[in-house]
Every structure is written in structure tokens, then in C-alpha cells.
Length: 286
Picture 1 (cartoon, one colour):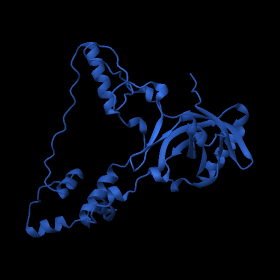
Picture 2 (tube, one colour; picture 1 turned 180 degrees about the vertical axis):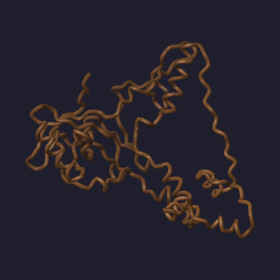
Picture 3 (cartoon, one colour; picture 1 turned 90 degrees about the horizontal axis):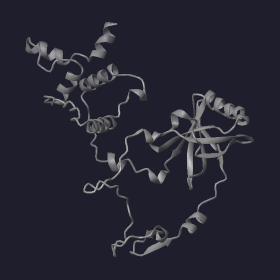
Picture 4 (cartoon, helix red, strand yellow; picture 1 turned 120 degrees about the vertical axis):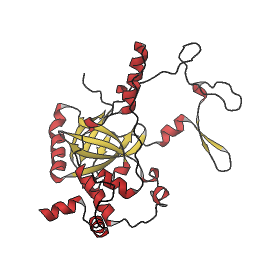
């Protein structure tokens, strides 16, 4: 079954343009989902808005949005007022700027979508735009109204198509100093840094999402299957506690080196401690 477009519009660069359709790139329906059940009756329950003071249920038609002011008063906003304040969608994705793919700060990426030609007549112009971006290794910035909000969108080529990723606004991204500001400036021992570099290099690989395992989903699915079959779920293996007494011991153990002091004279042991990391030794040997 072909995917269903969630938005249709017009992609343009100057006078060049084409009709496009937006498709969700994420399918959350594949995850195990649950209903909330009343344990005593076995019946499903539903969420309900309740007046904070009276405790009585509030009808959907009586709900409005409110903004709290510092003085404690609340400004009421009707749905019609919000709709009139939001810019109308002109259904256009105007590529306003191009930037090198290496300049993209992933911190601002929100949610990805597939952007494809909306019809056969648009395929040629769409392919021209995509191949031009691919040849110059750039992404494009555009703005449009999506889902009742003005959104900035990053568009980049991938395979035979384009990926449109909505972006977080600058005010939405928190200042990194709030989390990183208290991290002390430390000077790391060069030998420790060499060992850490060696460990990283031995574990280098390629980005392969198919290799990632959703352990939560797998565990929940196994629990459901076990309950249906009337058996106990499989027990997950417990991680053994590592007997590591220092950061250097942990690095050496991870690098495959012994944490025990080497036999021999004190002079030999001192020489061994000053020996270069595995990577350095390999380079000298070559």
C-alpha cells in the first residue's frame, strides 16, 4: 500500500519549481501500544477534563486556551482568535538559502519527513533541484506553514529523494552552558588519552540503523507473548559488576592490557608504564 501524503504544496527555487507531497518518515504504529484498563472491571477508561475547583467534568465545547500572567491573571484566547493570528499557508516551500551539509547543527533538527514529487509532471524539475543540491553537497532552508504553525524546514538530498526536517527555533533550544557550565577543566594524562584513542579506533564502524535494537520494545513484546501463552517471560541476563578500581585500570582492561603490575625490576616496570599506547607502537613498528 502506497504512503499517504500529509501535506501538499509547491517547492521552488527562484522561477524553478514543482508540486511536492510530504510524507511521514516515522511510523510509530509499529510499536506495541496499550489501552488503560480499570483493574476492577476490566473496562477501558478514558481521559476527561475536570474543573480544578469544582471537580466537575468540563464539556469539550467549553474549553479555551489561557495564558497566565505574572500577576496571576489569565488571558483567555478563543480558537478563532488563534486561527486569525496565525499566518495563512500559501503551500509554498521557497528555498531561501543553501548551506554546506557539514554546517548543519543537528541540535536544531526536530522531525524528518519524505518530500517527493506530487505528480508525474513535477518529477523532472524535482530531480533537477535534487541533483543540483547533491552535486554541490548542500542543504536548503525554507519556511512554510505546517500543521498550523510557521516552521523552518531543512531540505537535503538522500538517495532518489529529498528529506525535509522541521527545525527547532533558536529560542526553543536551551543554552548548553546550563548543563555543561559546571564541568571542570581537567588535564588528562597523555597515556590515558592514547589508550582511549586506541579503544575508540578498534571499535570504529558504520552507521547502520538496522543494527540498533529497541530493547524496550523487544522486552514488552516478549512479556505480552508470555502472558498470552500463560508462561513466565524470559529473564534478561544481568550485567556483572566490573571490579575496576581506577580509570587507568578501566582503560587498560578495555584495551586488552593487564591491570596487574608487570614482573621484573622497578626500572623495567617504570619503562613499561612509559611505553606508548598500542596505536603508537604499531606506527613505530611500521
